[in-house]
Every structure is written in C-alpha cells, then in structure tokens.
Amino acid sequence: MAPKPKDVNLKNDDEIFRCSSKGCKKGNLHEMLCSKCNKHYCIEHRFHPSCPEIDDETMAMKIEQYEAPRKQFHEANKHLQQKITENIRKALQSSAKVKTATKIHLMRIKQKALGPKSIPDTERLYFAIKKPENMDVKPVKIVTDVNNVELIETLSLDPDLKDTVPIFISSKWSLGRVLDSICDTCNIRNDNNKSGDVKLRLFRQLDGYCISPLKMDVEMSDLIRKEILVEGDKLVVEYISNTVLNSLDENSHIFLLS
Figure (cartoon, helix red, strand yellow):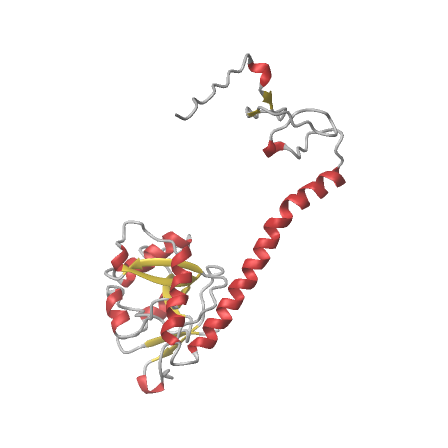
C-alpha cells in the first residue's frame, strides 16, 4: 500500500514570509531577501523600485535583463513572419503551389482573427483589414464606361499581413452589415447610418476597386461566388465623399487613388 501523505502543519503565521511590497499579500515558505535592503519580496516584486538602496542605473539594468528574452522572442517572431510571407509570395507565383500557399495564408489569418463569436464556423469568411489612418476624405477615380476599366486576369492574395487586422464575418451577411461589423471589431468610426458628407466604403487592396459602392444589400456569398472578393484577401476601409456616391449610377465604378 502507498504511504499516506504527510500533513504540513504550520505552527503560526510567522512561518510564512510575507512580501514587503506595499499592497502585496503573497507569501512564501522560503525567505527571499533583497541583497540591498535585506527585506523579503515575492518573485513578482523581486526587482522592486521601492528599495532605497537600488539606484536608477541598477534598476534599469535589472529591468533590461528581465525584458531581454521578450524582446528576443518578438524579433525572432517578426523575422519568422517575414520569411513565411516571402515563401507564400513565391509559392503564389507557381500554379502548382497556389492551393497550398492559399491554405497557409488563411491559417495565419484564422490564428488571430477577430469577430462575433456567434457566427458558426461553417459560415465564417476571413479577411485582413487595413484601417483608415484618419477621417479625411480620400480621392477616387470614377469610371462610367466598363471598357475603360483595367481588368486583371485573376485575383491573387497578398500574403503580407503587416499593418492589418485579421477578422471574420458571416458569408450570409449583406455588405452593409459586414462593414458595420468590421468597424465594430477594428474600432473604426462609422457614421454610415447618419446623414453627412462622409461615408465609409470597402476597397480591394489589390487594385483599389470599391466593392459595390451603391448596393450595400448584396450578400457576401454572392461577391465570393462572382470572384469580386477572394477569402483571405486584404481589404481597405476608407472614407469617401457622399457627393461622389450621389453622382454615381448603377454602371459606375470607383477606384481608390493612391
């Protein structure tokens, strides 16, 4: 039979060493004295700024030593993400590797994607969103003749996720609801439901094309099916003039000017 566990009986509170940091209630069974002030501190307050014997230079050195592993990890992870981006970009140039590269790209977005948790996994569509830098109205180009639109042969993914917010939305939502959700998730000011001179619209980062500037009730699944959007693509949210929108007809197209 296994021996019975021994009970640890502390005679009194003096056997627990209380942290000397103000407001800290943590205690330790083993004493850890500060080499400068000879007081006991818990691990969290081991390098405490309140010790009168520790000068600013020593404290800065201790903090730097503590932060060094975190900085090293951040730099290593940044380098790794750059290498992954480079490898995906190269793979997208090879027709034989496009499917694999697309899956890896989507996996990266899904790992950090934000959005309403109530959306079922089967309905989720993932994108990378570039937020507007300010609320200034951005210049656009209006094209009324479809023959003057520079068509691209095929939509391709931009694997660089720098300065973007990975998000997910529902494939069953309308474009208007998607834009509202993106603004909520990314903390973007949205006055589309108010009368005003400025409105938000969604653009493809690839060519600056505005996604359905007039019909905000179009369903996301239709945009994917018609290949106007590709899941995993980088989308740009920007402010444009309401006067421009009022001047459009159903055959007009808008492109964001860089």
